[in-house]
Amino acid sequence: MDPTSIADLKFETALAELEAIVSGMEGGQLELEASIAAHQRGMALIRHCQAQLECAEEQIRIIENGEAREIDRKTLEAQ
Image (cartoon, rainbow, N blue to C red; front, side, top):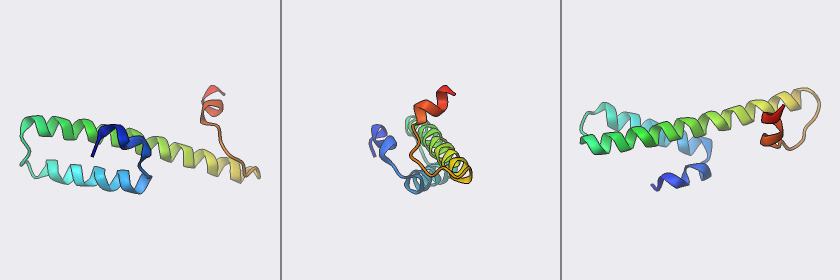
């Protein structure tokens, strides 16, 4: 899969790919270059999943405060 497509992945898909990468790396069968590429892809997937979780967490906070509305992530980060 192309590394630039990570931003388009749903959380569950990204997490499944991350689990597959970890499983493959644990097997110790990857060559050095493939292992480095897998590690880089895995780190990008981790960042992507963390960002999605943070966004979901913020949506829950807003809903809990009685305001069900769309979130502008840039506005939230500026606060």
